[in-house]
Length: 142
Figure 1 (spheres, rainbow, N blue to C red):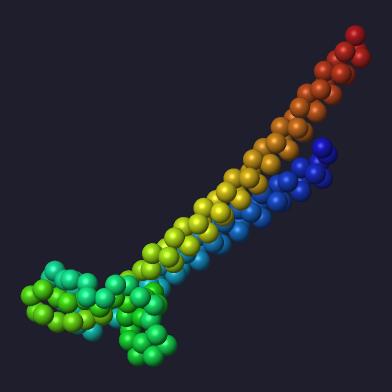
Figure 2: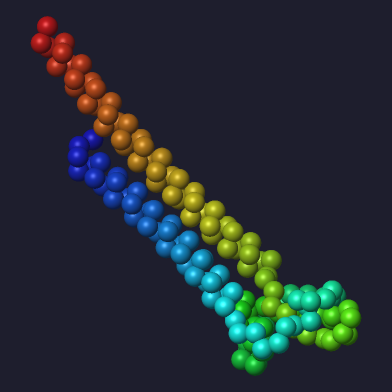
């Protein structure tokens, strides 16, 4: 394998690394957007115990436009606060969406691992050929 092939391997590895970094950056930026939200009043579920009345469900189109809780994740659950007896809505994360995100991340990491394994194999072949060439030249000079 010549310098061009090794260069291709390096470019392939760097491209995969850049793709993985873009994926991680997108995840971090979406997390940062979720954490920034104006607080008008402290919701009761942040200061007291609550019971989930309705499990985490996808927001309807109307809810997405009218409820600020839907803008965070796109999913909400209805809760009942124990002390104040208020019924409120709380943003939540869908188990299915989380599982999908997890497997996308795992797939990306496996792809990156495969690319770097191929890069290591390419580099090892180059080094083996150089070592064989050096030994061949030493034997020829005898």
